Length: 120
Image 1 (cartoon, rainbow, N blue to C red):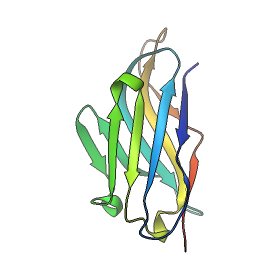
Image 2 (image 1 turned 90 degrees about the horizontal axis):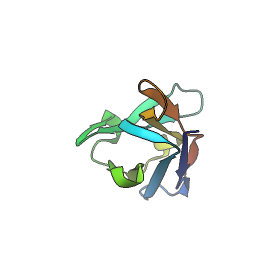
Image 3 (image 1 turned 180 degrees about the vertical axis):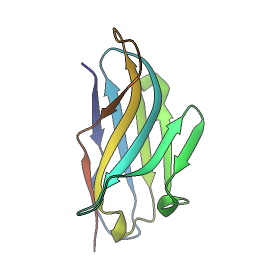
């Protein structure tokens, strides 16, 4: 059974930093893309950042403030969030496009979400 487990959320003051982690566990043959999405109260879920191989993608709202990285040996993705703003407050979800062993192709997996609150 494949699982994505996030950690690192919490309460931080504006201008502060947080680092999110997401580890994929289970019997995994390959992971193609790993990324982070977020959903604020009353808003739709949106892509924050994603990484495929050495290629990264960021939402315009976080460029220059957030950095995504990946440890392929540990099947883990990180999101370093700096200069946080109140509008970054949301539940952050980890996402992976991965190929579980015993299956025929890639499938989308999601973590349970971790709350990030930016407030003074």
